[in-house]
Image 1 (spheres, rainbow, N blue to C red):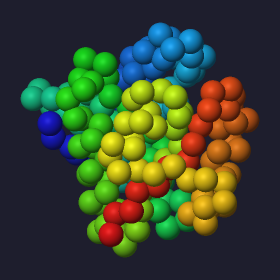
Image 2 (image 1 turned 120 degrees about the horizontal axis):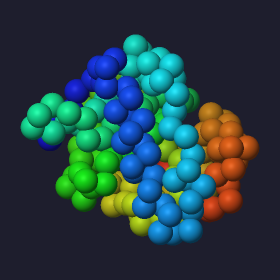
Image 3 (image 1 turned 180 degrees about the vertical axis):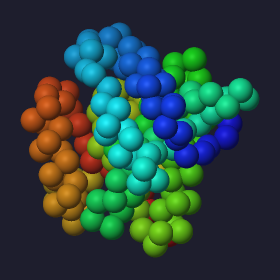
Length: 171
């Protein structure tokens, strides 16, 4: 699997990947996640233009997964990572995250962060296997930026299911 920057013409494919990646949530009683619209093309374009959108591509150079990242309080924050179910369980998500970790190190960032569902097998338990740790409310690594993201996600309705902020050092 090769990781590269997303191309402009591929942005609608990223939306398709997001829709497909959401479907397994239905089996967990989380249809609202599956029904949630993917990020709009203009938002994806902003990530792409700023060099913060990567794709994992198959042998035909077609995206099968993607990752979007922000910088939040000195860390590379994974805004979204989605793998098409046809490419799942093959290490694609891990490769995207490792690519971001390398980019973060090059930029002098000290950690990767993300927010995720605690009880979804391919969310918090998966990220724990990749070296992320949950951040307790009292943890100083739970920065104001991460708290703001959590509040925004709650306002979007994601707090219906338990969520957590997680961090992994990259030094």
